[in-house]
Image (cartoon, rainbow, N blue to C red; front, side, top):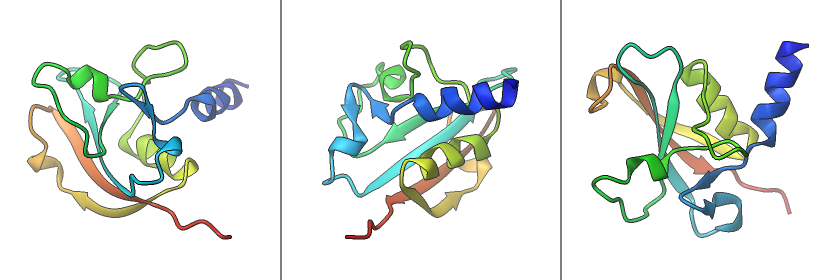
Length: 118
């Protein structure tokens, strides 16, 4: 039951970054998703770069949030990858963990929008 509720919560979230719903922006074809775990943290957050202007102190605005506005927690980096796959994004490349800045434990996924059948 808990697994089902967790999955429903995950699928009810939208891919919205700083107020921009990526589903409504077909011009955005590639994104960089950093799944990172804060020092001594248990869960992961996802930082998304779709080509938007990044503010020095606005990193929190670039993270995936749930419907309640709170940071959407992911159990593992694979949960982040599966979240984006469920919304039509395909994995292109993985950047090794040791190259993720400001993170105790993290990984970067380069993703592209999946081609849709017409």
